[in-house]
Image (cartoon, rainbow, N blue to C red; front, side):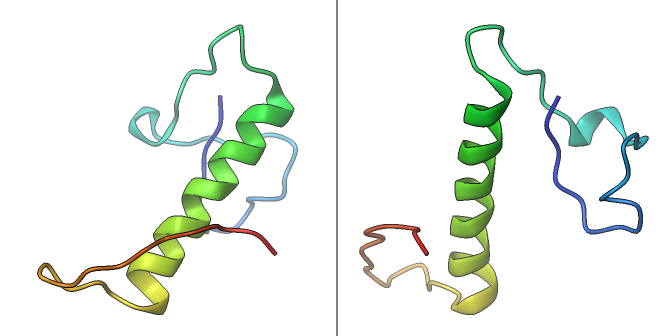
Length: 67
C-alpha cells in the first residue's frame, strides 16, 4: 500500500489511513518503484496546482520532474 498524507505522523512506522486514500500495490511492482512513481505524481500535482495553476485554455509543456 502506498499513500500520501501531510497529517501528523506521516514519518511513523505504522499509520492508519482511510481506505479511499490508499492504493494496492500489484505484485509485479517493487516498493522502490512504487515510491518513485508516486513521488513523481505528487511532484506533477504540486507544480501544476500549487506552484502555477494552468488555465483551461492555456497551453503548456511538462518536460520533466527532476531535481
